[in-house]
Amino acid sequence: MKNLMNKFLRDESGATMVEYAILVALISIAAIATIVLVGQKVDDAFDKVQTELSNAGTGSGT
Image 1 (cartoon, rainbow, N blue to C red):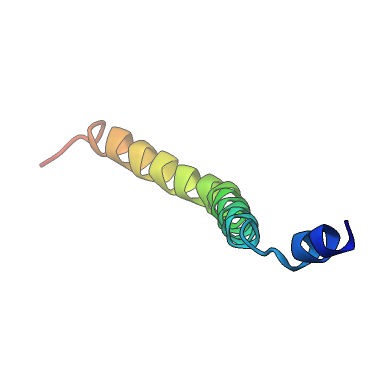
Image 2: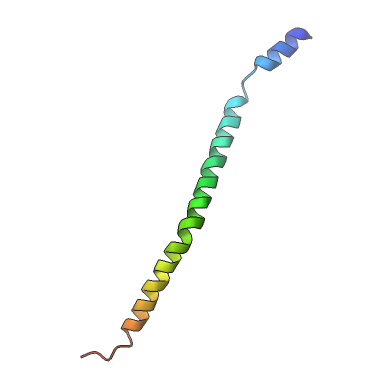
């Protein structure tokens, strides 16, 4: 029984999968945070472009 317990404690076969899962989770969190932080600025920029294009069509011209 003691030998079986020592073998179980030294077994690292699932450690790699856990490490990859943690890595994927961290990358996902970073990507979501970036989208949230930058997304509003990009949306504001597109709104400004849309407003400028709409206003460009209302001028009297020459």
